[in-house]
Image (cartoon, rainbow, N blue to C red; front, side, top):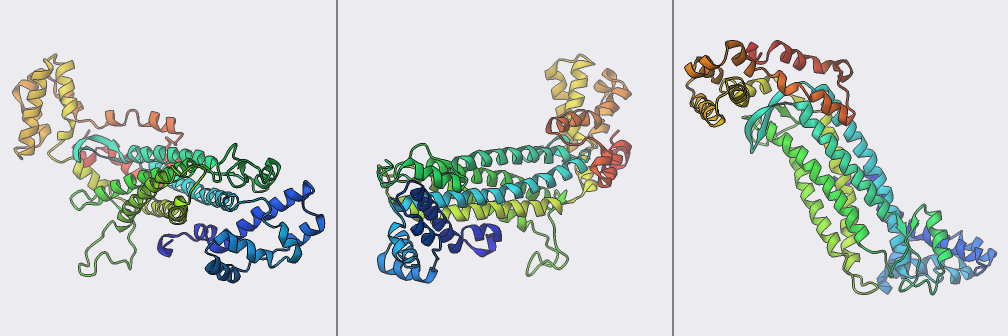
Length: 458
């Protein structure tokens, strides 16, 4: 793991010291199980429980033997004297490695889950604060119709919740252990030992195994992390697009002493969001590698091992890192409602074209094609700067003859776009109260009530 992108809690879980201690935990629980079955004398068990880990000695033996688990077993045996002959009794390397790995992935997932919970809370807070902060909705990157920043953020609340549910399910799949012997038959180690070890480690016992746990479990876990990354990449991409100079509606946090460029002092670049996008791509690559690891030969080969030493610790680290970084961005997000109002008013209310179309079809009873073409022509003139769209509509002789001034004015009312916001919030369990949303909500709400952009929207 690159320290730059490795949160300390995750790094500790996957450290060499943690891995070796977890291997020892598996081995000693197996010894306890054997003692309960009468295969290991009680006095020997007591000696075994005093076993020590000597990392330097393990490294020395591994260099000699070319096998990390064998070196670990030999080094530990040296610390317990005669009782060492009972250490690793009936086990094969994967029994120890896979079961210990399951505890690492489970514990890492717990850290990630807690951080995702914090991110969800930050998204909810901003969604509630900006429930009625009106802005431009965009499809294909082009102005479509108004919505609120709160609704935009509410979508991410829902997506992150689903990602968290996915990760929880994948964690349950991976939080399993197996102590089955060389080819998974329990020929050298009975199921009672397996159950004792898994119970002691708070793992579910795999119903069946080869010599290893099936790697579809690991692939599902890494894929869940990659999907979490993809959700956060969409959030980061949204912020990047809204921070473009020509849009300028939000800005990610920028420190007082921070530099956006080594040469251009004016620059505020969305570097945090860009970092999330880059790391999310790495996570997707890890998911592909994890899926490639599923098809092992017969009862197992070792082609998965080298890949997993990289992808599993890194995937957990990167996922947690971008969750924490996303939380930092969301909490410190700078929102510019005045700029949102300016963009919404571009071309004089052209984004209300559908409401004009609907009024002509429903109230004036025009054929839809006639109404569509009439509105489209006026919108084209507005884009060509021949006048504000609302004025072109009001001054069009055919439309003014078909619709009253009051009806035309109502076509440019932002309220219909806010009518069902609260229902969406109720479905998500979010607050619909301005007071609960906090004082930061008040300016944008008042702007809506008074009419955005100097009263040009009713």
